[in-house]
Structure formats: C-alpha cells, structure tokens
Amino acid sequence: MFGVPVRGLIVLGVLGVAGVLYAANGGNPMSGDKAEEICKVTVTADILNVRSGPGDMQPIVSTMPRDAVTAAQPRVENGYRMLSDRRWVSQQFVALTSDSTCT
Image (cartoon, rainbow, N blue to C red):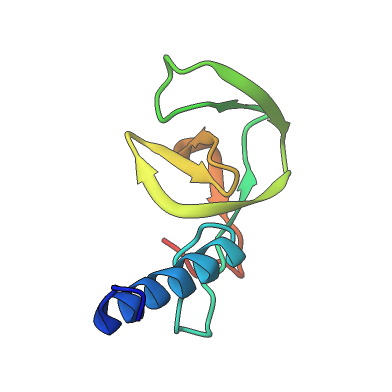
C-alpha cells in the first residue's frame, strides 16, 4: 500500500494511539491500578519555605503557613518532599495527613 509495508503502518498506528493516550492523560503514564495513592502533607512550621528544588540552597518560590494542607508526591530527596506541583519542602517541617497512603 503506497510502498509502505503493512507492518510499518501497524507500528505507526500503535505509536500514534499511545501518543494520544499519553497526551490525554496530562503527560503521565497510564496506570492500570484503580486505587490511587493519596499523598498529602500538613505544614508543622510557623512559615514553611517552598523551594524550586530539593535543597536549602535552591531558590524560595513561595511560603506556606502552619496547618496548611497540600497534595504531595511520595518522592523524598535530600530530606525534601516533592509537592504535587513539582516544588519542594523540607520533610522535617511537614507531616503526612491521616488519610495519606504514601510514605
């Protein structure tokens, strides 16, 4: 068909569908697991610095007040927990909420 092998068209079709599904899911991998992990933290410091990266030398991009609750990721690096918006907070100044299933 037009000089393109059928096997090549199938591969292109599969890659195209995978690309559309990836884009439709906001760039996140598709998950077959229906039970979503809940990861939320509560601020325990009076004022918590939110940083652009996992380290105290990273720029402060915002702050959060005591008892603020925010969505987070299970990822902890250099003593910093990644928030859901890819910003970072010091792990020592946040506590997992009672309904969190992440560690």
